[in-house]
Length: 79
Length: 252
Image (cartoon, rainbow over the protein chains, first blue to last red):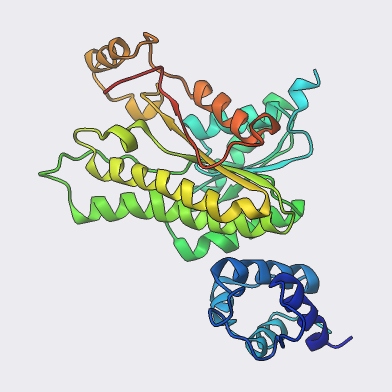
């Protein structure tokens, strides 16, 4: 499974996204479930799924799905 | 060793500011009760030396780690590196702190910044770093070191008192945020504890504090350590966001 597909699953599960909500279009703080607490849930879920550590500065960069993909690639995550 | 003595068996604990005083007593208490302890301090060689001492005394696994909590951005990497070999972190005791005494009329900006950088920014950085690690397991317990001065104030210690009042607020906020991950955050607020921090006080001043304490004595580091051990243990499993006074009933 490619990284993006796995990450979509992480978004859906961590943010408890309803059916039909595309993780690729939501943004941090522009979706009711992606608030500051949801953000930490998402980060921890990403770290667990891809066995990586996401630093504080990278954590802030993740404000959308594409940014999350970039950070994961930067920290060496594999699909 | 009794079953009670092993209540923290298998758990990994990080204690900051643990090379002496209350921090060392806490590390000792947790080690005696079965925890693997990461004993940290600003001076890495001192921390390693104290860790060896504690391991010899208790037979527990104790490791030293260098951690200067006043360097906010360096805290997370240092905590992560210290914990990584164990693969988990179950307990954090955020004890590292400074106590600079200056009357209001003489306190300097440097005094205030030094105190706040270590006593509250450092605590927040440590809680943030430990919280990230605990979230992965959806469990954990933290105890932050406050002070009776944070509740009642203390003449001549305005920056210290303010920093410890902030610790109480941080405790409650962190408890609210981290509870959803099964992480409990509490604080202890020691009264006057007989450690080297007050070694320079005149005997009359110590006597005055003893007299003002209903229990009729100064506290010991072990008194505080036992309270911390209770709060991080399973017996405190539904206690969160609390600041527990360990002060012998002292009223300033």
